[in-house]
Image 1: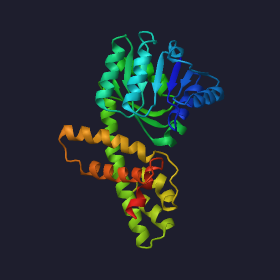
Image 2: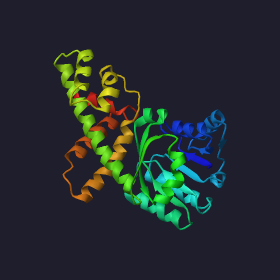
Image 3: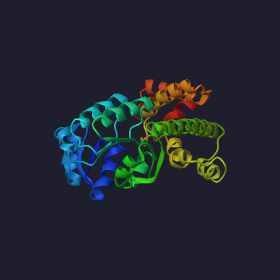
Image 4: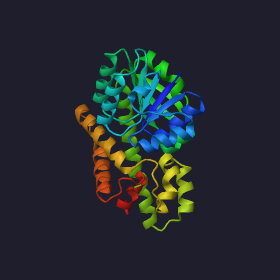
Length: 282
């Protein structure tokens, strides 16, 4: 297999690194070319001068920011990849975007898997991401050796768009947990509780969760180095809000979290970790 990787941000760069470590990575690309060139030199692979440099890849993974970025990349790759190749999209986008991408590639005989991930920057660095995949099972099997380089779990959730639908559910839970943890810890501060006793006590009981474990101490210390940025969660929640509206569910958690993260972004905290939510709760 020869894999390509497009989008070398906080998640994409370590994911590409895991591919290189397994000898699977051939070429990388990024909106900021200097970043692609630097990582390519570090990993001993090529930095793409154009999308034509991906022509020899069996699998190309995307990890970009917006729906429009995904469609732009897919259109360019559709013109150069060979039939039988597979594009895997790790971005968080709408189900509709996933279906449009699949149709564009299918017209050229190229497979597509919508495969958003969960696990944050830590999961990407450690190669322990959870991949929620939608699309044709045969296409997923072609891509599987690449995904296994950075995933602890790969689950085929169903047809095209099922991966993005699963990520939407994931983001509702993430946002709700963030709200509860930040509000609870802000209350703990006001009540004068010792964080060195509070955090392990909470983690030992029913309130224990990933966000509390990974971000509890840092947020209480006023440290908001991003694992997942406020601006990115806000973008995801806007997608999820539309899906929830179409589904007809009561979406009070989504609505609250979206309003809170919009306020944080307006305050200039777009690039801060999502645990910066405690700033509002205080």
